[in-house]
Length: 148
Image 1: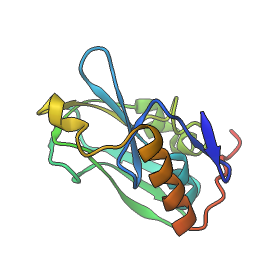
Image 2 (image 1 turned 90 degrees about the horizontal axis):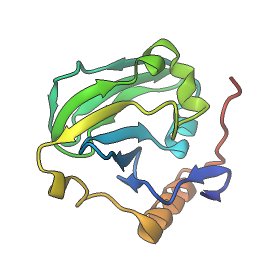
Image 3 (image 1 turned 30 degrees about the vertical axis):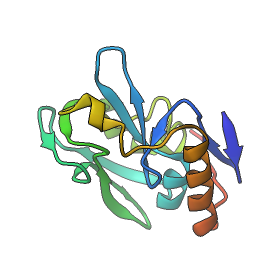
Image 4 (image 1 turned 90 degrees about the vertical axis):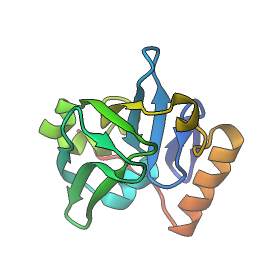
């Protein structure tokens, strides 16, 4: 896993280069969460609500809503698809997002309408790493994860 200014940036994930990471799963679904830089920007997450399982989401339409003491906003769908599962643990313990954004605090599983197109607008590898570093620099971030 690479790290930049304290921000963890796993190389194996796909990124929208804004807030979300995406991980293809063996069953054809895609796990979606927010990045370490995004959770740092949000601050301590106090509330997490999700669109219902079975909801069809257009690209950029929210799959979840997160609220902290300093920020509230939607987490955009990285592609068109249907929510097939939500992370109930995050709904019960929203602060987990600030502790483990890439592991236990994934947000939703989605099944893309077009699996081939789902990853087309996302970045991976060095392109993703460079884009995420630029995002971190633009917002002058030093990532921190909260203690449990």
